[in-house]
Image (cartoon, rainbow, N blue to C red):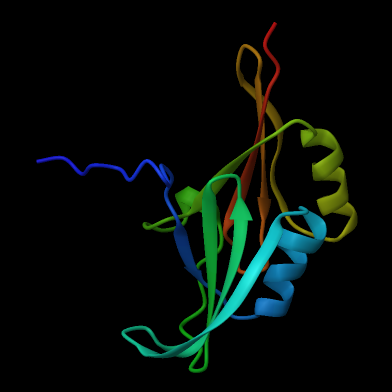
Length: 141
């Protein structure tokens, strides 16, 4: 059996626990310019209580969860450091400009711009919790 995607939302939403929602929103919304859609209380769910901050990236929603009882800190270092969801990819048209803005703001650049195949350049930036954000620019020849 295979899942049947709802045509109203053919995308994956991603929930990420964060230690400092102010720093997270400053990075994703203030620096990267993603749309902060809403905040909603999370009263006593399986993860605990706290606040969910919803950020829109195209059809995808990033759900940053800030819990009252802070979980163990994430292991930084991208896919080579630990298992689990280690990075997310955002397709952009201004990779170099965005990268320089992140560098100027003091974020760790985990991977400088790299051509991975003809017309595809990527770079990796650490968010405030050590998750990697891959920026991918498609420059067809």
